[in-house]
Length: 431
Ligand code: B12
Image 1: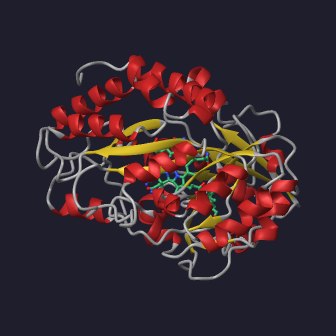
Image 2: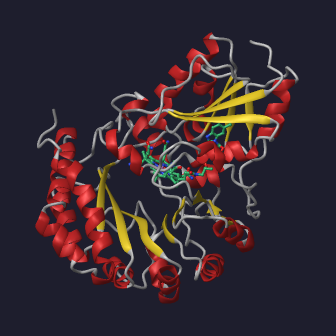
Image 3: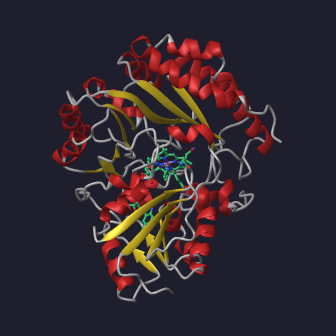
């Protein structure tokens, strides 16, 4: 291993899995790496390399290289790590994939951070500089505590072009333990919110309007969310975020969301079948359709994510879903193939049942069928997914959705047109 140079230099790398072309202008920067940068003492120079936008500087002189990885990025992350380690530069890996499979990540890294960086990062840097770096730094599982985060270090984005660099989290964690989701087992089964004043101070420091909250479920605890939204009124921000459809059961919350400047909310509808067995997300007070209408009527664009491939999905699911969406008219439906991510109950189930085709992580990307579906062939699942995407983005489908949303008509139409392009280019059949 090389001797650390007198000025400590940390390179943080976000691995790319494919070329994005013009669409990269609409990406958000990695919040995971921004948080690691924010935790790093100012005596360190921190450089961000987002491989979607630039080449990895393999010839640079760094004290340490930190790499983040979701599952679909893991293969590329390991290649990058191996390359730096061959040059004698120590590598630390973190993020959801190394958290779930630390032994695998440790084959390519000098140290692995398991879980959140906040409790362990300073110790790790200290250990590195004192020649006693450990293989694993395991953060304690988050409890009920309050979340407090150090100020952002957004200068790492200087010179880079993103949709916006005004991204932040108000909370972490989610109590809904959906079998296909990794959040609850690793980021806690309660909502941990930052203090309202800490969040509002960060929001007030923004000099542009477009802001994106990267919470697991921003509106999950209405009592904590409402004061934040109240405080945002009058800040002139236009914001988006992710929540559970259930927030719309509270009309006051919907009103505050709209009045605080929300332009779009992403929700997971997941599946239109069953008794909510695999997504215990909606209460019984209102139907999904009523909740969607309430959000639309408030002028908020609602992106609704659908997943195909659950065990109760047969060949009829695609038609059923498209008809359901025609009825409820969420502003912007998106479709994904069920992907059993390592660390989830779903992964363990499919692995135990011998239904995983492979563990080639780069193909765990929501766009390939990586497991044997229960009630149809993998080819039919793939083709049904393509067909649903095409049908949901015909001009007549788009217009019938956008006309339901008179208050957000133009934003809604613009988003739909942006989504139409890639859906039109899809093949009709699995290749
Ligand atoms: C916000 C978010 C997004 C945003 C990302 C915005 C951005 N650029 O930051 C958007 C909407 C774009 C997005 C897209 C996708 N996402 Co997403 N996303 C999330 C979400 C809700 C929060 C992620 C986040 O920023 N958290 C805040 C940061 C600070 O936390 P963190 O990432 O865990 O990082 C901490 C630690 O892990 C650690 N750490 C992380 N990296 C590193 C690196 C080093 C060196 C160190 C030391 C530590 C460290 O320290 C950090 C601070 O504590 C998570 C759920 C979750 N809680 O993880 C899903 C999640 C990460 N997404 C997921 C997925 C699948 C996707 C998509 C593939 C979905 C799709 N169908 O397209 C895409 C991929 C996009 C891409 N670029 O390739 C999955 C990943 C599962 C997996 N095993 O890979 C998650 C876990 C959701 C889930 N329920 O399963 N996503």
